[in-house]
Length: 616
Image 1 (cartoon, rainbow, N blue to C red):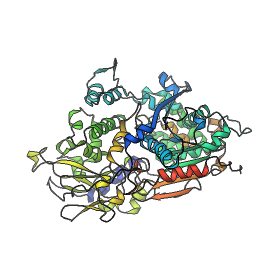
Image 2: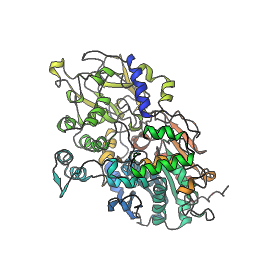
Image 3: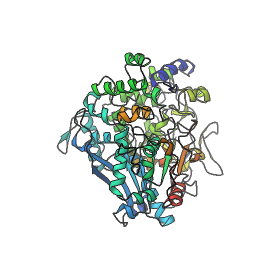
C-alpha cells in the first residue's frame, strides 16, 4: 500500500524497555546541583489587562446537525463552536474586518489552545498596525462531549475543590452529577466524525460569517496547529458540494492564504502505520491481502460495529489526565507560589498515577519500583505545572512548552523514559518519530534527607522564562556552576500565559475524545476511491495556488521531518517547542520578539485583498 514505516506506540514502548538496561539506577540519594536564583524579569511592553480592555472573545455557535447513521449524539453536538476574538469596538459584522485568521487545533486540543494567540494577535494588529483583524479558534464536534460542569464551576468560584468533589466524590453541581468519562462503547456516532465533517464545519463557519465569496477570497486565512496544518491543506483541495463540475465551492477558491503552525508534515496518505496499532491483531494480519479500498471500507465498518476503536487510544494521555490540566492551570494562575496539593488530595486513577510516574521517575528502576513519587516532593503550583508541561521535564514532545525552570532544590538529569546519552542520538530520534523529548530532561531530587523523612524536602519554586539568563549571560546554571540547566534562547513562553490558556473560557484547551475516524480518513483521502466514501479531496493540484506561511519549532516533534506538503514561506524558530508557536511571549520584545505573531500579521497584510492567483 506504499505505507511509510512508522513504528507504533506499543513497539516504541517495547524498544525503549530494551534500551532502559543502560539507564542509571540505584537507591534514593538526595542532592545534586541547585539552580541559581531567578534573574530580573524583562519589562512588559503591555499587560494582559490592556489586552483584555481592547479585545473580546465570544464562544460562537452555528446549528449544523451531525449524521445519525450510527447512533444519536447529545443535542449539543449539533452545534459548531468556535472562539471569536475581535476588537470590542469593532463591528459585529465579520465581513468588515481587515483580515480574519481561522485556525484548526491539533490532536487532543480544542479551541482554547488559541486563547493566548488570538487575544495577542488582535491587540498587536490594532496597536501596532491600526488593523481590525479577527481570529477564530475552531474545535471539533467531539469537544462538546466533555462534561465541563465541575471545571466551569471551579473557574467561576476560584475553587478547585469543586473539581475534586464533582469528578471524584459524586457531588452534584448545578443539578448535575458526573456520569464518568466516556468509553468507546458510549460513542458509536464518533465513527462518522471524520475528515469530511471537520472540513465542512470550517466551510460552514466561513460561509455563515462571511457570506460573500469575493470577501472570503480577500480576507480569510485558513490554518492550524500541528494536525490542524495538514487539515488546512485538505481544506484547500476539498470539494464541498461533491460536484467536480462546479468549483466555486472548492476550498482554495474561498480564502486568501494558508498558515501552518508547527505543521505535522507526514499527512497525505502517510499516517497509516501510525494509527494501525489501534486495530485488533487479526485485522492487521488480514490487511495484507486486501486492496486499499477494501482495507479502508473494513476499517470504517468495524469502527461502526465497535470492533475498531473510535476514540484515539493515546498512551498515558487519557480524558482524566486532560481534565486535570485545567485545575493545574487554575492553581498555577491563582496561587502561583503556594505549595501544590492537587495530586495529593485527589483519589487519582491508576492511569493518572502511571502518567505522573512517567514524568517523575528518574530511571527505569524508579518507574518499576518507585521509592519516591510526586506526592513526596514539594512544589509550588507554578512548579507543579512546569513538571507536567515544560520541555525540561515532560517526556512527550507534542505537549511541551518552554516556560522556565525550577529553583530552590537539587535537580538532576533524568534518564527515563530515554537515557540521556541515547536521547541525543539522531538515529533514535528519527526512529521514534519525535514522540519523545529530544533534549536532556531533569528531575527534582530532594524529597527529604532519607526514605524515612520523605515529604520534608524544600519547596521547589519556579523561575519564569525571562528570569532564566539574559542576552549577555544566557546560561541558567547551578549555584556552583557545575551544571547548565537551560539557556535564555530555549525559554520563550510565560508560565502564567500557559496556565491561563489551560482553563480560561467557556470551553477548554484539551480535547478528551479525539476521533480515530479523522486519522483514517486523512490516511486514505488521497486515494482514487476517496470520493466514493465522501473523501472529496479533488483539488490536490491546487493546494499550492495561494500564499502560505509555515512556522516550525526547532525542538518540536516534526522539525527534522522532510517533505512539506506545500511550497511555502517557511521559518524554523530556534528554541521553540511544539506549543511555543502558540504561547511564546509577545509582550517582552526587549528580551526577544515573538517570532510568530508579528510575521503572521505581516503575512496577512501582504496578502489580504490581493487578487486570487489563477487556477493552475
